[in-house]
Image (cartoon, rainbow, N blue to C red):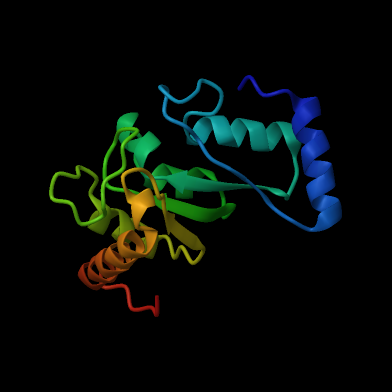
Length: 157
């Protein structure tokens, strides 16, 4: 991991003082070369030793790297606080219910359920959806409700 321990410790110390979490996201190799998988996150967590350094999972990087999603839960010992979902394993994110999408979102939600994940989950708003974000978000909510039904997740959204 190429992240400076001094820099990270400085940020984490301030986060601890404020009582906030710093959420670390792995990136796909095309987005960066510092933190690209669950093992990189584990190494950084061990190096800095701060409870303020929490993690998230974006569905794209593990999919691109052929890394099982469950490894994030197995290796990150309950520090997962945030999930980011989309429906395409490229820089262009499609609507969640777009049939051209390639990510297995229903199965991903089953993994969330099996691991008793109860944190935040969001979609990313990208072009061409800037024009009408309310419409995009409404479509996303409908898709998430369907995904939850299929994954047998009973929770008020």
